[in-house]
Amino acid sequence: MRNLIQTGIIKTLALAAMLVVTVTGCETQRSEPAPAKPTNQTESIQSHLVESYWQRPKSDELLKHTEVIQLREGDVVKISFPGAPTLNTTQQVRRDGNIALPLMGELKVVGLTPANLEQAILKLYDSQLVSKEVSVTVETSSFPVFVTGAAIRPGKIMSDHPITVMEAIMEAGGFDYSKANLKKITIIRIQGNSTVQSIVNLKGVLDGKPAEPFYLKPSDIIYIPEKFSWF
Image 1 (cartoon, one colour):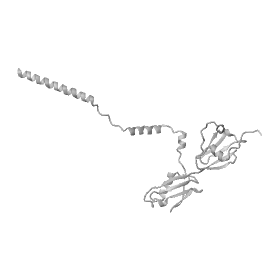
Image 2 (cartoon, helix red, strand yellow; image 1 turned 180 degrees about the horizontal axis):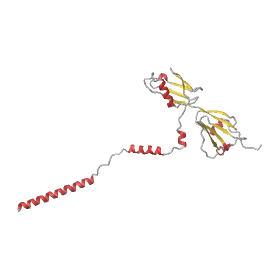
Image 3 (tube, one colour; image 1 turned 30 degrees about the vertical axis):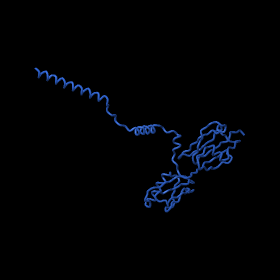
Image 4 (cartoon, one colour; image 1 turned 45 degrees about the vertical axis):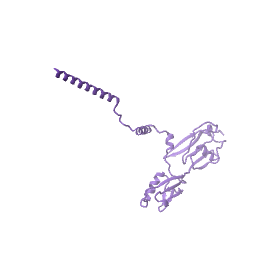
């Protein structure tokens, strides 16, 4: 009888111990949640920005400011060879569109971008360069625009900086106010095989009204029409 009682006590104590262990384990699991899967926040943000950029339509203004520079007659280019500084040169693009490269002679560059010119030069000097590096920078760039019609001195205007319609007309001596129709200044622009015309009202500008400046591109033609007259 005594043995049975002792056996029952032992079983009861063992069961109580098991319950304590089980409850303690549950509490430990609740107090120490499993760590979350690590994420790279920087990569996530960059990915979101890239997706947003490509999904966002580009405006005409953004496209206007990201146009690729093409070399023109009169541009001054600096060509640097990091591995062969004796070949460094700074030249102005001649009227025939060429420059003269040391040891290589003439190279036509009009219409090329600086990156295009770098590749062309690397190809020419490929067998002579240990370090396949060349850098082309545009030191100065000038371009022509043309003013015709009711201007004081119509003709060709050369500019080495971005220029507006109003600035180009002032370079041409200004308007012939007795004849000029300031409300219908026409800008003629050649784009590929087509011609695009834009009408600009400069009367409001001269009256002091705010207006978005119209910037010209190389070879644009500004036509200042005359006022309509019955006589």
